[in-house]
Image (cartoon, rainbow, N blue to C red; front, side, top):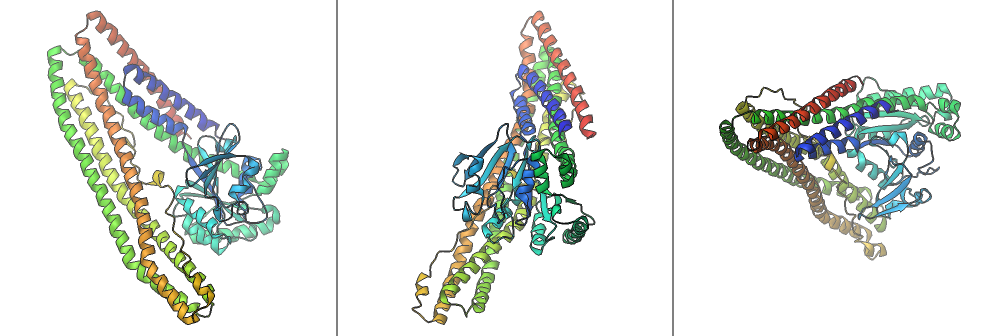
Length: 592
């Protein structure tokens, strides 16, 4: 399915290895380190393809049909309760990851004990997620297929788990069914999904349940509803039967596989993974590699020019370069200082927004709770307590869920603006270093500029982690269930007591949210600053090494100088060959 992509990826990995070998022979450790990072990202790139939908749409069966094996448990009752990640492995292996950091290895037979509502009700085993390694072509090249609990079932924790996973989605497979067609709860869920996912594939499962005419009617209805919900001119729905596809793959029945219509969708999915995901990954790795090759090429030309410069002139040029580097050093320190100031300002925005949240939402929650109490005055005290506790819990969680989505977008926009500013400043510092050396040694070498010379990370996506989790209310009213006090009096006391708790609950969860956002912002800042410094260091170190080598050779004999010059010229020839290979790969990627 991805043979062409894999061929280009392997050839690019080989080019990166060749360039790393040249950098290693020259002792350019920073360039070599950058190349290693590019190679690791290329080889280990993760792409989250998440299967979403309402409960009982056949998500687990659909994934099994892709794999051609009953890896995930399926049943008549709503089943999946834990997010399950499927990744490539030469052999099948299953690991359970717990929220406390513990990991255990289990067998396929044990899997239902951890990922199903029956085996792990309300996630009382405290499972974070399950990772399944499996030797499937779908899972190669960093593609992760992820099974999520169905939304809209009677198990609220399942719906919450699926919503919590949305920020980590790269592309989604949204499963519908022919009977019943799309529901109101699915439309509401889809409205939330579209804010997190750029690419959504719509799959209408269970076409074997109806005849062709009924399937077309059901699909037309779903298409019209989805287009209206997404405000889209046209969408495509891919009909198939996961059940028939799985049976066909297991029995190697090609006719039945064709009847399932999975091969049609398989072609579409494979094309997307190659053209959209694969092309982006390859282009990014190629451009960063060409940038580093250009740096090495520049360093070699600089070294050769410095060797040919008379000693007195070379010493003068080195002195001028060092003076320029002192100015660059100050610019670099100023850059970090201002960057830290902007990050502090970003945290101030977060704090002000949290204060505004508390000021605006606490009175609303008070009124909502009061209105809920009025609606349930006829209930017994014990029922009243449960309903009021649930209402407060739901109100607090809803308030923060809605606010976090808005705040995430606001802070991401601010962070993108800050990081863009300082990546541009860093590139100006790099240009100053290169320009200084080019002017001093009269070099006219064309330099390659990558689309992004550093990773700006305009989203905090790779640092998202698990969203904040909220405390459940304490069972503070057990004594009322004994009916010691009159019902109206007891209910009033319950309402007052719960209303007193609202500020504490909001404040409590504000602290959790603040810590989560601050942790992500600070980690983003540290990673981003590291990338900036690594890029500057690689450029400066390459130039300084070239000059230092030339100075050393000035002290050597004519024979040694000739030998060194021949070696450097050979390295330059090797770079030219790699450069040609990279150009051919660029053409191949462009043709995808």
